Amino acid sequence: MEKRRIERYNMDIPVELEVHQWEGDGAFKGQKIEGTLADISEGGLGIISSYPLAEDMFVQITVPSEKRILPLIGKIIRVNIIVPNEKFKYGCILTGTSLSRQLALQEYIRQKFKME
Image (cartoon, rainbow, N blue to C red; front, side, top):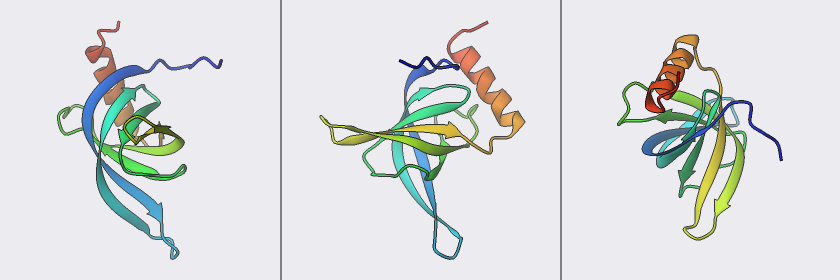
């Protein structure tokens, strides 16, 4: 079993997702959906939603209840179906995140989970 280089922390926080995918003419198409932030790390996160999405799609993640977490951009790299409740869990890596947002996320994780 592969061990993670960056530890993930379990969460259960409602999030707003804006889903982006390329249109034929090269433009982005956005759609807003709801989800739950299931876990978080400095390099990625897990999202649960009842909306079917595909690998390689990009999502902008906003956490309304946590103003310290600025909107993040994630690329879906893994899709798992959660059978009992017919939802999907998406593994996302953070992409295009500015240094200031990375540092803010690191500080949020340290404070939330009381890390040194």
